[in-house]
Image (cartoon, rainbow, N blue to C red):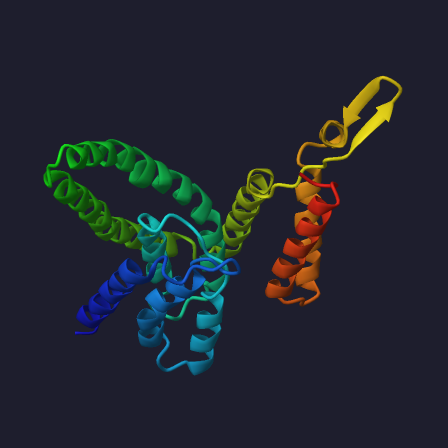
Length: 264
């Protein structure tokens, strides 16, 4: 009876993610609110006799999370399996796995679930619409529903992986946590130069010789300015400065430096 109830709760997790995965996205935590809302029934069932642990888990799942919403159920499945019995202290491991997987999963999901099918079937549907055929609309809807339904086997696959994982890490949980934390940091670090754009507009002149400030910085270290900016924000967060203040500060600083001709 308990197992059947747990299965129903797990399905509620998946269906909640279906309908809220992107509706609450924000610049501070991205999909964190949707993720926490999705796993909330599971957390309430698992930690119903541990109110302090429940509170801790809710706060843990309100941390930054952002990945491809179609493939995210795989991570949800792992999360549910690892925390299911409520006895294992896997909070750090779950956080590290979420951080480590959301980057690679996003890259895979964006390619297989967005770029390829949207380009192929979107072009077919658009051409049918131009020719006056309504079939393109239904084709597009069918493809979208099919892609969404793939989340169900992905969730089950993640759940199976998580069950096997928790059965084999009882003596190596610390090593798993550390390794996935390193993976997550590597993924986030690699994203810095591609996501954070900050280019110097100033240039150095000596006679007829001219060299842009950005090229000088790139010779020292490519992506130096974005790395310095991220490091500054990181240390500000460590000083308990609210993220919203940092976001506004970066926006104002960017506008001012751009208007002054220092950035482009």
